[in-house]
Image (cartoon, rainbow, N blue to C red):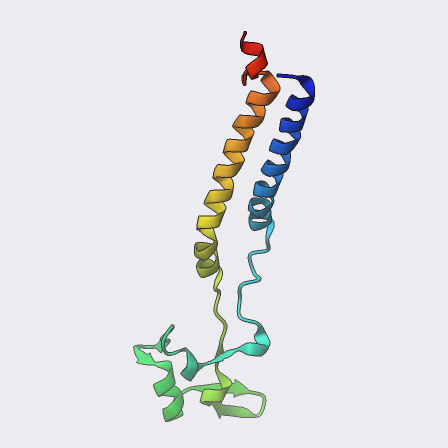
Length: 133
């Protein structure tokens, strides 16, 4: 293969490899705590009933709060915990990663294919039509 064409294909393969490798690198270098619900957007206990149930000594937390059976010790004494005092934060990293997995697998396959093609171009394993005769 002529040197100029080999150089062109090598640069093309490297650029395709980097385009596919960048999302993989970003996924692995991302902070793991960014998927928590922000503190300012706490989900109230009543709004999270479809995702979580919290029990204390076998009784549901929302029932205990409505009955006034949960109390906090403060400097002024005991105070009953209200439903509005409880908020929940969720970690959604498993859902986000599960959604991104097919694209990351495709990117990894493209990285592998371009790496093999790059090695073949650089080593001269691909035969140019004019070189056959």
